Image (cartoon, rainbow over all chains, first blue to last red; front, side, top):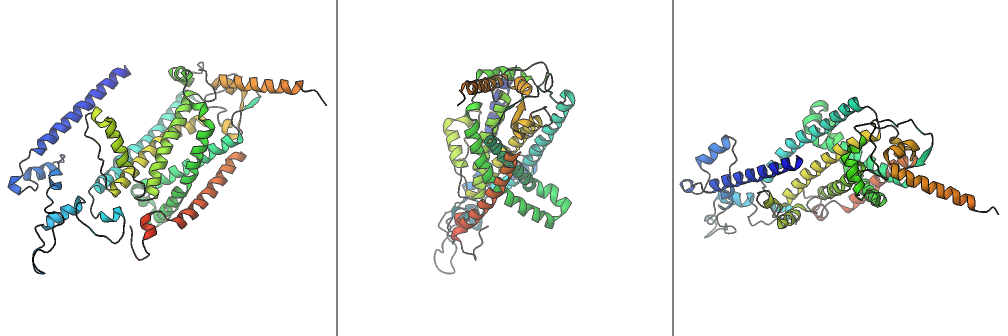
Length: 405
Length: 41
């Protein structure tokens, strides 16, 4: 059924993409001779109706780039280029400029993509991102009402085994605390203008925003360090196995108190969280570094070039992604991508926090004291519990066999 | 609980050290190469 739906969605995407491309073709054929190549009444009416208008034709109406110098004398004309053409040269970053600050970003005086970024940031990003967070909290609350706290069957054994070492717990809490601080300060930055300023005013929010920025910029390094630590400690335990498929097919046993699919140190659910944190954490760190050092680490044009080379947009009927981006566009895309990835991570981590605290009896002990009840271990990680018990038995028997001196 | 508090302490230390290093190093070429009389943002 899922495969069938996927095929339908794929074909629908290709069909819509082709429709869009067909519309583009029609727009390219608009006769602009009456306006000397400028926009037509049809363009204006279409814009007023809220329809998408292709302004590509403007990019070609740039006059004589670089020939705007005085042609005859001090009172002569400014060459063969009109003011409108000079403005378009500036707008499309084609003008020959000389600036005192030697950086690629300072040579961009006008850039169109800014308004698209602003609309995306203050519109869909906030509504979909915020909606996803509210949605996962509501979903977990509903799950809690229906399923309740997942109990240790038969009650605690009263005997514990070590689940995580001190170093593992240190890395986890460094990652967790830095992520929560980054998440909260990121939300303050993103939602501040719309939701916090109306409540606390500009001056109070200014202090809060400056404090949030300090936290966000500097705590990020603890997040990156802990990400590396967690990867080193847990990579070998999180490689996918056939066991994970069985675990996933049984829904991890979280929907029924009688089903307990086998698992080693980490079950498939935990492995998914691990890889989400590692892969998206790396991505959010890279886009964060790009934002932290403005215009120094552009990544999107190069990434788009690689995606185009593989032919991904073409597979879905889309035009190739832009490979020539202005420095400001790189920053805008970094900000949007940084936020989208962060929202996905926050949604996943909220679910992780739920299952590690109020959602499951005995789960918090794994990261709290580092020791878990034996019955809890057998219920959720039976194969790992057997391994640990075997090791403990071997250790204790070898200790007993050492002759007293 | 000790690893948790050690992690919180490490987080504070890393943040303070990062702030000192970034402020002394500068965040961008533009910032480092421009004088105080040039507005860069």
